[in-house]
Length: 68
Image (cartoon, rainbow, N blue to C red; front, side, top):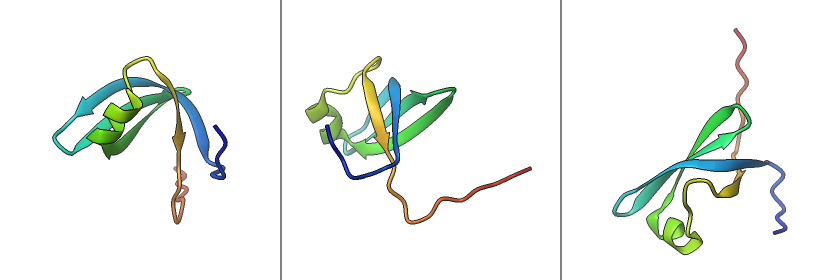
């Protein structure tokens, strides 16, 4: 898979919660969890399930940084 997006984080699916229209996919990325909201149709089409190795591809107009 080749993609122009630079922010690609490899991870493993920990949980998939499918609703009527949308689904929440929880991924383990390093020592952090990352949640993605995608369509239920995408979950079905991609056959996503717990344990699958996936990439979180992040595209945003801005990224904020916080420091304590």
